[in-house]
Length: 403
Ligand code: PMP
Image (cartoon, rainbow, N blue to C red):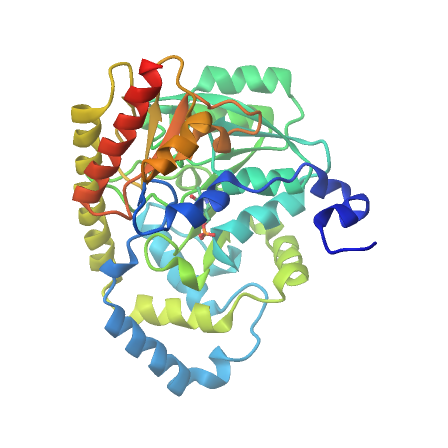
């Protein structure tokens, strides 16, 4: 080995590293965060909407009054205080009667997915997931050397017949990974009726379900349908996070697991991080017990609803004919389908030159499809910036269509 370039190490990497490529979103962050670029990429919540001074004081108190525990190691499963609070948070979504004993606190929702993948996936195993699906989950499944088979969605979420078809082709699939509510990236929600159908299909096939629900509380009109876990206790792993309802920088999420699996999941997490951050857990516990967090969620909802409306009306007014998009009832994202012949990935450098960024649809599929799509985020930019972003984007698309 001579230099420090990556090539010198290529032969030494584990097999699981070979297929790994930089996430398109991460690569985009650098350019998209330049001030002159209107970023419709990324998925950052609008943290400026938090009462930051009050949160700062709360963190000071946490250090001063509870430093001996919040700066110390904790237990792998997470503190009992936080797990009790998490059960209360889940009861608001309709998951009642969950035991804190079956909650495992994780380092963001992301580690929840990683732990479940480590627990269930051997190399070559098949995972069923919506097409498109969350890019971070694709990274986890790829690192586990699993194969992702996408299942089609429409406006009402995952299509039951498509799931049955996927199961006929992959009867030994290990689990279904699904984001039923305000899906990332598609912005669609699985209907009430389909929730029951999907659960019945999974139950009949003995297929485990990983339900990922970071956005369920961010509804703009009526409340979201109850989670899958509220309907079935066994066979469903419910993952969520405080990243979108409070603060992603704290990296606190959780899994509600069937009781039998809880111990293994904790062991897996201990091998991974020993324990989640005691300070971050203390911060979330304090936030939930001393601050008006339910009102804060309403604040987020209102801001995001206004921004969604601004994005949707800009799309209606400005997008070239033949473009279509979803109308999310909550969450952070709109999924757009481009007119025939446009390629969102190839168009990206031109969009950046025009000072607008989005995420090409290809990032959300394991198989390279999605060139005709893009994900547009509306949580982070103010309404007038969103409109300006769409104006720039439609200019780029008009040019592409004219050549
Ligand atoms: N699942 C989905 C569907 C997400 O969109 C995200 C965050 N973008 C996560 C999990 C991970 O959340 P966290 O930031 O809490 O790790």
